[in-house]
Image 1 (spheres, helix red, strand yellow):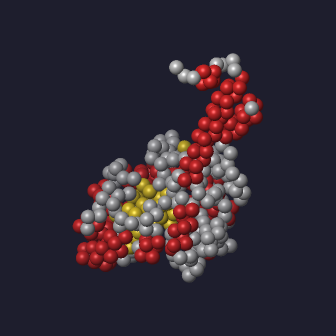
Image 2 (cartoon, rainbow, N blue to C red):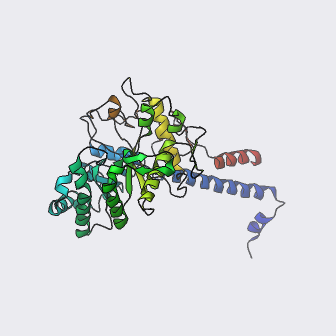
Image 3 (spheres, rainbow, N blue to C red):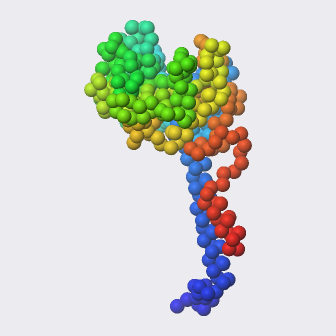
Length: 397
């Protein structure tokens, strides 16, 4: 039997013990709320980011490593296998896609193995390299030789990865422009360009065999830039709009990116593949452009990337694949001042080379919340549970 002084705590008619119990309850609720806040602040962000380096003013990779870790970004895509970058991120747990665009040499099995042995294997497992992309947007170009070399190069790299015992850690893919589609509207009618079928069909078979993802670079900005009078800006920016109904499936699309993803799924299905996953290896919106680049503004870039990141944080899928969260690598980490082409090409970055954001995306230095608004203030977040605790404490105590 408990001592008398403890037994009195359980007597409901005693006003003082009741207050003590209530205070303990409120403290418990506050502790739970604090754990929720800490968990949200330390949870990795669910999107990846492209780390391009066509610039002469970028920070050292060790500084970039610190920046991305402060933002909890844990997936990065490179266009090469820069040893300085891979070394700087060793031990961080950040997951990397590395690339090689030297298709001609990679078709040689000996050279492919030498490249993997020199540029990938030495960095494992300290740096988490999970994918090698062979070439970039090869099939939407005009280099027929490169198109013919693409699959043999992918096969040679995969064989090298397997021979070196890395296949359980590293897969092999290539990134395509969404322009390999002949039709993307309605999404259910998506089909690949007829002249590319001879290349795409065996590549799809390869992906199915080695179980690697089909990567697509998709930029709704280009569609809006080409036809601003007919393409709805809210539709491409993930803002409220009536949406577009696919007459074949009755599925409603409230943004162009999801429609493009599902058009790729439809095109793959037309080639006999429902066993592959589509990932967006590049998407983004420029914050500046030439005078004729309609829509290239800071406000639109912030809206596109910010609204996209909210949807990613929610684990949202497309109308066709609602249970498969979209997998996206945003383009790009930095503005790259040496990229050729129109001004927009040099202004896709989320950050300036000095590490300051081009615009506010709601990063609080640790995480991105799906309900966060784009405010420049950094006031602490008060959760609903914390507010209840404070109100109850004031009422009862």
